[in-house]
Image 1 (cartoon, rainbow, N blue to C red):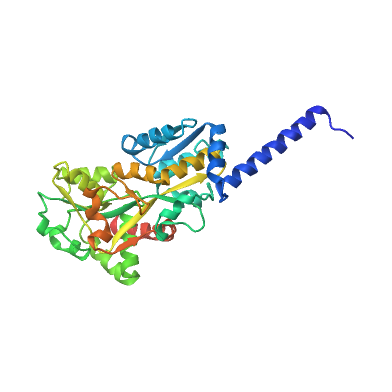
Image 2 (cartoon, rainbow, N blue to C red):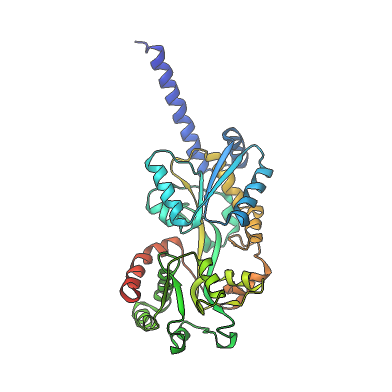
Length: 356
């Protein structure tokens, strides 16, 4: 029995769509010798790619887009910038509406949040070979794009360099009571600081330390980003801020601001992560963009934008070298997305019990 022409045509269309979808899935994890050419050919047909990212627009996103489209003029790249939580919320809403717009998503903390929400799919890129082993995800759920180191920030007019606390225990000095600020309402603020103390000291010693820190009458800052908190330190509103991105004070210091970073032992570090969402519309262009962001050219753009590249063969700016733990001779405590996910919720509960 022959199918009516309309039904036959529909079946053929469904079969073609299934074949296309299978090819798209294959390219995300392809290691074939001709992968690069296949990705480029497929991206040329798709013609566009969308990036969601937490990177600063004029500092990083626009230069990335300009360089990408100069190298691949057959693909139009657009981007949307938001904080990590905003990005994941937006991606979740698109997933629920079965209308995923983003092809590539990037930001500090994006990886574990998106994976836990079931919003991602594994992918592979040969660019990870240039990254240190600790900056690779063996399950291919995300790739690392940039590294962040955390320190304290001191207003050098209010806290002369020779008097600045240089260890976690020094923060317990009575002179700093009511003068220590940290960010709340974000996993990379107070909870990350608490997690670092727990991992470096063990639970019992960490609990004793945190009780003493609570007696310092911490200032809970919840009205802005990490950069905003550093600006408040520069303005003299807070003498010291804990667990800020270590390079932010150095950037302002180079411009004459009265601020400096002080690393603690160990130095907590995290990484910006990049994922490919489930239901990606332009898988070939997504892989082309992911490869570019992780290439030497892409990572150099991030280095020029005052970020710390994930690739070991791309150096950050010289003025930022002082807060790289290895160069400063201070141990680093790298907190992978998996590790952060394991500890963040319980660290938030510790914060609520002791510091609210």
